[in-house]
Image (cartoon, rainbow, N blue to C red; front, side):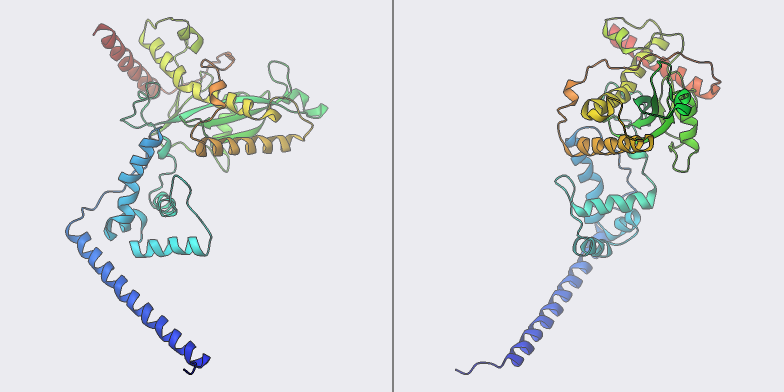
Amino acid sequence: MARIPLSKQKKIAMTCIVIYRQIMVMIMATLLQLMYLLSITNIKVPKPISFVFDDTLENRITARILNVRPMIQGSDIACLDNLRMDRACFYKLCEMLRDVGKLQGNRNTSLDEMVALFLFTLSHDTKIEEFAVTKNCQDDRWKWFKNCLGALDGTHFKVRVGDKDKVRFRNRKGDLTTNVFAACTRDMQFIYLLPSWEGSAHDNRVLHDALSRQSPLKVLKVNYYLCDAECMNCEGFLTPFRGQRYHLSIWKSGALPVSAGEYFNMKHSQARNVIERCFGLLNMRWGILRQKTWYPRKTVSRIILACALVHNFIRTYMSIDPMESLLEDNIEDDGDNIEIMETSGMWNAFRQELANDMYNAWIQSRNT
């Protein structure tokens, strides 16, 4: 039997490829038309979704199933509303990112879900709100602080500086340090870090600088952070009551609050302790931060940022952080003196109302 010439074999192969592509195009067109008909007849269009996750992996998976997947597997109308493109365009984008950009998903999130979350963030500007405490939060430490983003505070790391800078970098304990200002979420991940201030700088001054920088600490009108009493109690920053017992060691010893202000301070200290634990974990994890190094001050600032970034990576991708179990339960700050500052009357009223609600609910629970 005579062999088919190579040129003819190529023509036959090309003809088969063309026929196959035409068949696939027809099938895809039919499927898309069918899905469109189903979407406009049976599937209800959801409103834009706010991605607010709780602490546990199970709750995160549930939120993903209920929030992300309907956008990319539901209707074209829902996809347009949330991602600003239909599903065909969305999957084409994912295909390009996978094939050309070599992007991949991870063990917890597929590439499609990553792209959907990114597009949703661009479309609806939800970058900050995803960390906020939700109305249905069941965490006893945080459930009273609705819309709270987390806690913020400052800490000190030792540095070497020249003789002319020693006065500015000498803190109140006499050590040469850099004042590192940070904000963290409930799950002990840093979301803002400013490591460049001198050790003598007051935390309130550093906070003002963080809000006015080119890359500032951003706090939406509806959100706020828990702060210590050195900061001003004003919109976006909730501080404890002055003149009332506050520190965790007091409540750990068995003392009970005797007023709404003390009960608020107890809950505030239990929640805000997350930033102290975050700093403690950072120090425990990275030995280079625990002692003075010979690196220049700017290099030390970059080392601190790098350590914080790797810390966040570990907290994200390790289901259990073995270092966390080594932290003491009552780790807290060193109790800096409180200075007199002007406060916001409206924010003081909000704090007092919240304290009264907390205290009344606690009294009722003790009487039942």
